[in-house]
Length: 96
Image 1: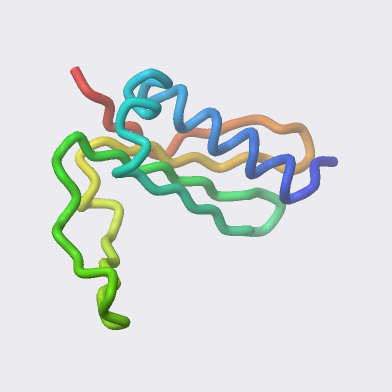
Image 2 (image 1 turned 180 degrees about the horizontal axis):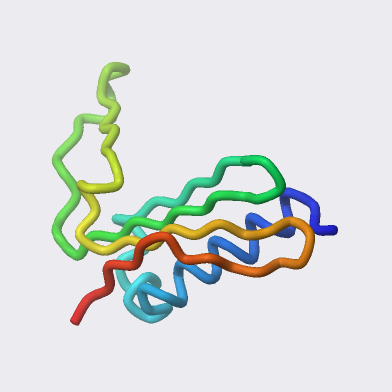
């Protein structure tokens, strides 16, 4: 049985590898990852863009940019089974 932390680490890395490790590394400053715990599994998501990040004045408190998964041109999501660590990819959009 995996802990949430172990399953998250496995899932996020699997998503990064599915998109392309070097691509994700190159665009790490314009990427995101997230996870959530579901019944017996951990959902993981990684989104990456090779476009410039939107301009934001960080001196303003209300400068928060939230996006959905569809806003990331390259992304991967998966579920990691906490019993055996098996990965089930839900969606992968990688650069060509």
